[in-house]
Amino acid sequence: MSIARVKSEYSFSNRSPEADAQLGTLESFLDPITADRLAEPVLTPGARCWELGAGGGSVARLMARTVGPAGRVIATDIDPSHLAPAANLAVRRHDVRNDPPVGESFDLIHARLVLLHLPERQRVLRELTRALAPGGWLVVEEFDCTVPLRVLTAPTDAAAKLFQQVTETMLGILQERGADLGWAQNVHTEMAQAGLTDIDTITYSESWAGGESGVSLHEVNSRQLEPQLIAAGLSRGQLDDFRKLTRDPEFSCLSYQFVSTRGRRPFA
Ligand SMILES: C[S@@+](CC[C@H](N)C(=O)[O-])C[C@H]1O[C@@H](n2cnc3c(N)ncnc32)[C@H](O)[C@@H]1O
Image 1 (spheres, rainbow, N blue to C red):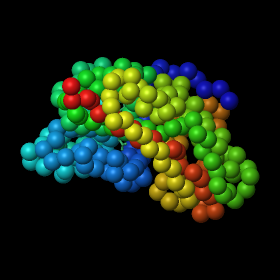
Image 2: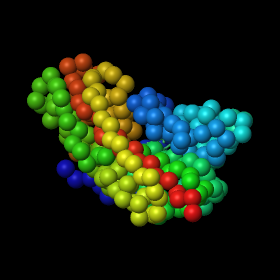
Image 3: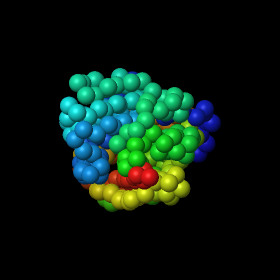
Image 4: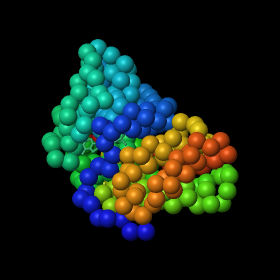
């Protein structure tokens, strides 16, 4: 199946009608894991934090609640339309590929599902490292999209095949736009090479049943990417069948592998 080559850019849009559902699904799946990874000593009262590519803003709000009135959080996004400021939470439009860092001496910088989309990810990670205070933490969390999305149960073999065809085509579209599907596996090494210490990585995956929130991510992604999926040779009928499948309780699959890596700038 051929995919038209397009210029490198983020594949989704926070302005699309599906953005609320997409960002909300990511938050409900990932926030509990992220909250564990940001627990003390990573996120502490009084800390200065940068939430990068903040999307729907749930992690920025978690940070703001934890740092309290003595701390500061800045939430940035290339499209901050889903973000709202609060007393200790500033919001700024910021393109991490081209704009200078929004400050320096951060105690915590967090980026979830952002760098994998950006061809400049390696340079950006180095810049984020330099924006940390001594002892400050960088937490980068990504999907490892090289692990095949295993179908666990399906009403028919044809349905399982269609699921794999559509999800693989979506990943191909992301890749054509500059995403690195295996970047999640590189982050630990990249942090070490950038001079960070105390680096640790965890990987998480769970089963998603048809009709549940998790698997609806595939449905909303297929709506956001519909023109590119059609251009890649899928028919509207196939997309309709795919979306029905994501709501079918007889269907279940494994989620993407979520890889969370933390590293710390040395004190001296
Ligand atoms: C998949 S969403 C993840 C949102 C949020 N981090 C989360 O995990 O819930 C990716 C986010 O990165 C933002 N983004 C994409 N390219 C960006 C860039 N060059 N600079 C800053 N943010 C960017 C998007 O607008 C979007 O909000």
